[in-house]
Amino acid sequence: MSVVEVAESRELKERVIEINRVAKVVKGGRRFSFTALVVIGDEVDRVGVGYGKAREVPLAISKAVDDAKKNIFTVPKHGATITHEITGRFDAARVVLRPASAGTGVIAGGGVRAVLELAGIRDVLAKSLGTTNPINMAKATVDGLKRLRRPEDVARSRGKSIKDVLPYKPAPAVADEPDAAPAETPAEPAEAALEETSA
Image (tube, rainbow, N blue to C red; front, side, top):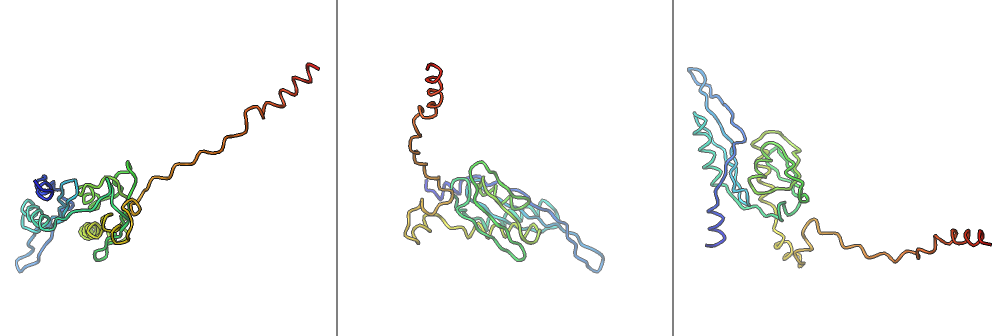
């Protein structure tokens, strides 16, 4: 079984970010319908966001899931975090995504958190700098994730090794410091005092 087939065979989980009731004014009054914003992903590296509208909530969610399946994509990752810092933009929304060290968790809120968790990202720092509209925030997050570059691609374009372009490189081991002065040095005054006493 190829890598693509394995990825496609993973079960996709869905999460509803928002359901909104909207109204259309017609001659006889108002006609209500519902919109649903849904994110789906396999919590490994594939994620997609979809939007649906219908007269009933379950049908709106179903339409949103179908739309999300059409927009699914693979997210480049470095361990449990993203490969580099990036700012996603969509209309008035701006979302900054920063890689984080292991154990940090997903520091994000609302729809941004849902997208990152279902994309399989476990350690990341996110900050919304624009509108709080959940649709635009989710799509700005998707824009940022789609524009991430893989370490091997960056290394190839720069002519460097992969370890040179990855974030959070381990700090070099500190060289052993030269041996301190012999332990006898601080004890000299005490020895001198003993000699004086004996004299």
